[in-house]
Amino acid sequence: MTTLVSLDDVLTAEDLVGVLTRDVRVRLVNLSVSGCLVEASIKLDEGAAGSLRVRINGETYADDVRVVRVQQVQGAGSTWLVGAEFLWTTQPGIRSLRRVVARLRQVLSRQSVEFEFVSRPN
Image (cartoon, rainbow, N blue to C red; front, side):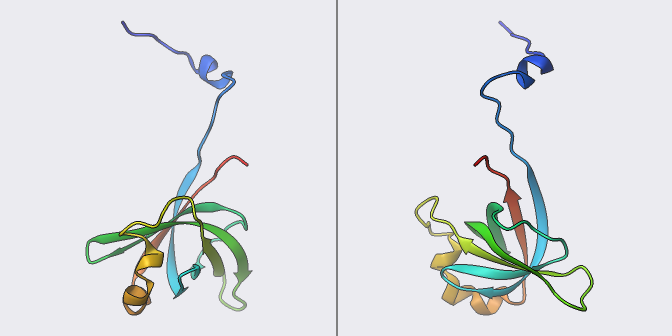
């Protein structure tokens, strides 16, 4: 049996939750066990939370992060420095950035990383 649901049914539901995502390419400037500093070509909002994913030699490392500082780079057009802290939303796994910082620090400084933010309800 198939049940058809109209758009009005979805939009008027009491438990409606939406998630807005976007991928932002950034350059990694600094990485530590507590967070990172990246350079972005768009301004990100302080307090935005998301997932930082780094792909190196076919391996992906990731952690959830929250933007704690945003500063425009003077004289560099539309370039922003974004400070992000690692969040403790889950136990760090084998592919967690914070667990492999020392080993990856040299390689990461020369790599492009993906910085994806997912808005979450407060």
